[in-house]
Amino acid sequence: MLFAVIRHDKPNSLDLRLSERPKHLEYLKTVLDKIMYGGALLDDDGKQVGSVLMIDVADKAAAEAFADADPFVDAGLFASTAIRGFRPVFKDGDWL
Image (cartoon, rainbow, N blue to C red):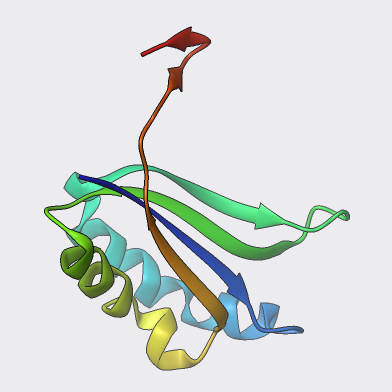
């Protein structure tokens, strides 16, 4: 089942994000098979203020476990996290 993991960083946390990024990337390497799409949320100046991941896991509990295991969580980077089921309607300009 597809889930969107939408995260907003705490204000003024770019230094924390950068210092913890190597641990975050190592974690992502262990779960690449579950990640369908992902990337940075940007502010109007193009600076990262969060992230979005589309993941394919068994259920919401698995999505929550996926999100909770990210080292950024223990580092206290996120101001908020939303995990929502996702049903695709379009892909590459076509209806599904």
